[in-house]
Image (cartoon, rainbow, N blue to C red; front, side, top):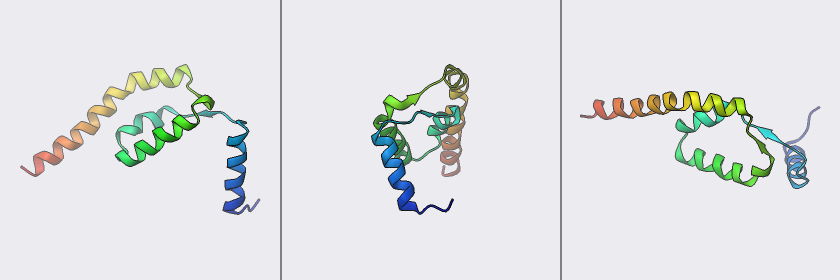
Length: 88
């Protein structure tokens, strides 16, 4: 099953065009947005907006996000606080 990249790209385009798919992101995809660069985050959000009708957000993912997002956000903030402390 050795497909060329161009063949895979065409297949992906076909699937998207036919709306013959659904996507379920794991909770970590959402939690890791705090760690990505602004460019990566913008890309992810833009992509999500294009396929929003095919995205599925299970209740489990939402609960896990709600339970863990403040911890992830605080961890990211501490990284910046540590960096600013180093430069003082």
